Structure formats: C-alpha cells, structure tokens
Length: 294
Image (cartoon, rainbow, N blue to C red; front, side, top):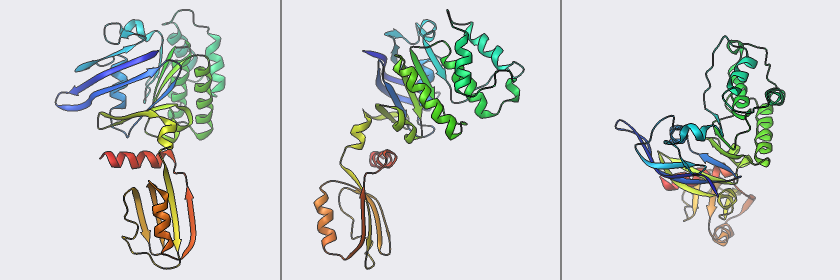
C-alpha cells in the first residue's frame, strides 16, 4: 500500500524551472530517501505535497487523498520539518510547542517533555535566545509531538552536532518502528544510507532513478587503488567501465564496474607495489551514476 503517490508533478515559477514530471511512490511503513544536490527540486516537491504551493500540472495523493483538494485533512496526520525554521521570537519553547499541540486532537502533552528530553532541548528558553541548532530541535519536537502517520523531513540535520544527529536518527527509527512512514529529503547521501530502504534521485527538477538502496550498492562497483613499481602512463587504465580515474606518477585510483578479470589482465603487464580493492561508498556510487546521467 502506498502512503504517497506522486504522478508527473510539475511546478514552474513563471518561466523558471521548479520540478518537471516528478513521479514516485512512498510505501506504507518505509523510510524513503529523496536525494539530490541543493536546488534539484526536493523542497519544491515537498511543499507541493503539503499544498503549501500549487503544482503547474500533475497530481499527488497522500493517504489516497488529493494533496490540493484535501490538503487540510491530510496535514492533520503529517509531521513536517522544513529545511529552515522560523518562530515567534518572544515565546518560550514550551509555550510554542503547547500552542502547536493545540492544533491537533488528543495530543498527550507529556510527549512534548519526552521528546525535549531526547533532543536535549531546554523548554524554558525563549526562541530568540536559541542557536540555529536548538531551533532545529524545536522543529523536530514540533513535527513529532502529535505522533503523525507520515513524517516529512527536509534537510533535517542541518545545524545539529554529530551526537544530536545520532539521537535524531534513533528517534526517527523508533517512530518508524511504531508504524510511521518517513520521507527523508537530504543532499547528504551518507545520512540517507543510514536510515532508508529505498531512494529516489532527483536532478535539475527531474527524477533520474528510484531504487532499493542495497541495489545501488550491489551493482558490481569496485574501488581500486594501485601503486606501481614504476610510473604509469596517463591513458593506461582508460577502459570501458572505469570512472573517477586519477593517475599520480605511479599511483592510480578509479571506480570500476564490469568484469574484474579485465583489470587483472592489465595488472599482469605491470610490477605492482600495492593493490587495494574495496567496496565504494554509496556516496561515490551516487556521484558516478549522477555524472553518467549528465
């Protein structure tokens, strides 16, 4: 069953491109990663899903309901953390969160205190006195306090230190284990790798791939570092399937997809001082794929 269904969603700002024919589904109970560089169209897609902006064409449904026509009803069961958060500066954190909770039915006020403790958030401070990272914590608590069925996160970890990022990831995993579906948008692929089971890649407003995250890693990519006894000609390893090739005198680095025996055959002709073959990171695979699409 799909919680989110996006079909050829398009948004233009005048003549400027927002997103073009974006299509993907978010399955119930999954953590879906939505990745691409800044300006690729991630936030535009999310804001359209939340009917904060209206599409030029295409359609989107959440919980089987039209995002535009039934947006008010849909948003009751969504927790949303935008990439940037803005609040009433003179309010105390606790008052702001209680005010936010008043928009939903049957919210347990104790949940505010539980989430604040997890995120190490001082509820008695004024918003104006908070750092950017602490304001982001307020947004996290605000987005989760009503136990939403769908959690939409747009660049959620910006401003959080590494320890707090880990607490945040643990919190999202816990909410997911309780049945919440998560749409996690980020330009940092390593974050998506930690949390998500499937991933959608967007580039210049268009979807270029939707795939299982393990499938992206299991496409027979290998990362080579070879140190030769002698200097290597710059074009020696220019073979089909090789990308990110760099040659520095007697040291060669590249990522390879294909029959590994072809590399072995090339190495047989040379004296080798050191050879390292390892799995590339998902980040490196992603960049290879992205460059290939370009």
